Length: 82
Image (tube, rainbow, N blue to C red):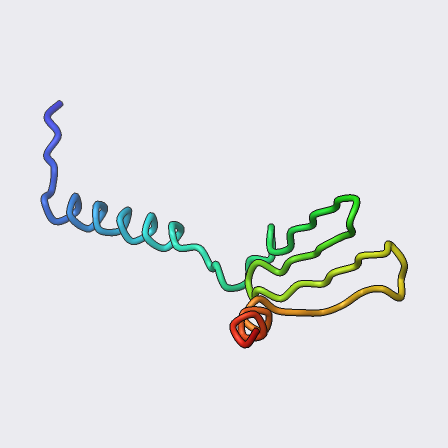
């Protein structure tokens, strides 16, 4: 048997495969919340950092009343003023 390959069909198949691979390769990074928050503990307290916005929550006495909110941009402005 002799098979013939139609150039037009090969081209359509190739372009279809490229389209499917391209469509599945894009990731929506905006809605990904995985790994957004980082926590660090030490003898001085606890810090929870939002890596997307730069805001943090700080607790230095390990009680529920000792939580303080802040942001890196606000802390930088205060530090420059001093």
